[in-house]
Length: 64
Image 1 (tube, rainbow, N blue to C red):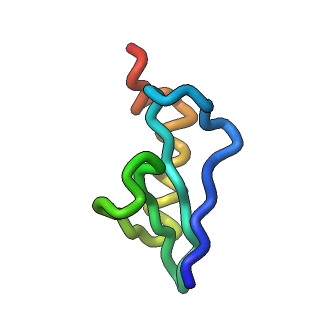
Image 2 (cartoon, helix red, strand yellow):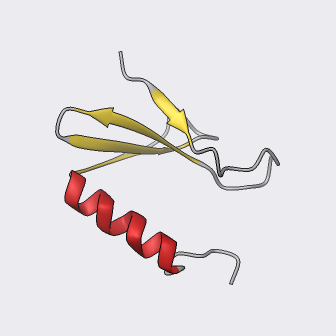
Image 3 (cartoon, rainbow, N blue to C red):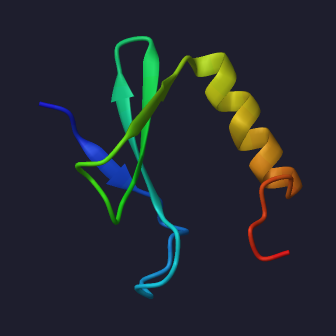
């Protein structure tokens, strides 16, 4: 069974975009919390770390 967890930084408003993560063997699963049966992205730990770094830098800020 895959355990998905939602970020503690995700809001509770229904119109907000939220992601869930799953620890997989040597990979990280990413999915949209509002569409858990929809598409999923699976990346390696290096790519995930780079993505998180870019998010922290604001490179993927959807509010701009």
